[in-house]
Length: 185
Image 1: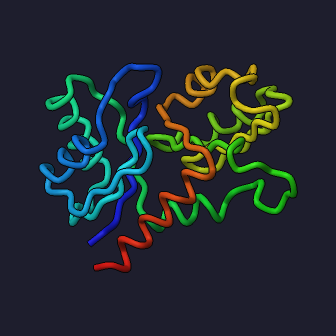
Image 2: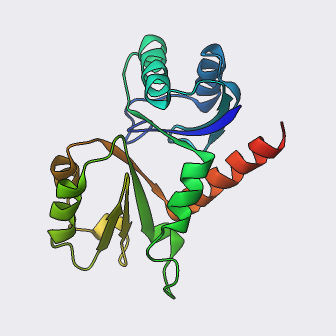
Image 3: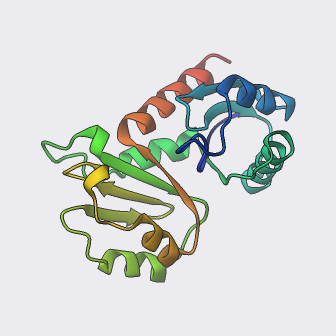
């Protein structure tokens, strides 16, 4: 049985698309997703499933949320192994002074392709540093995200696929929860 990390885009942000985490866990359980656990209030759910088709599973989750809560956020899913790869590929890992709360990983719904990734690499974003590999984008905000001039909307438009961002602390915590769930079988 696979353990999956589900990240919902745009849930409980700025007073919009509100979902209580206990209601979200109940919804996942009703979708036959087992041992659902949430992390923080932004729609992160770690669960077990027998489903092998991850894109079909994401659509099922999105449809379930729409039926229950009246809006349809993107559900972006990663397996435990994929999340381990995300952490292993962190381009900032060996650099001193990187603050985890200022490192954002954007998980993309699909692979944007090499041409789109190359366009993103060419974008000027100083003082932020942006790296993109596969279906993840790593952005370091040395002055914090609140002061950034980097347009996340422009990045998404260039990539032509939706994404949802999580700071490094959340990424590592979700992996820790997934690994714990895997070993508790």
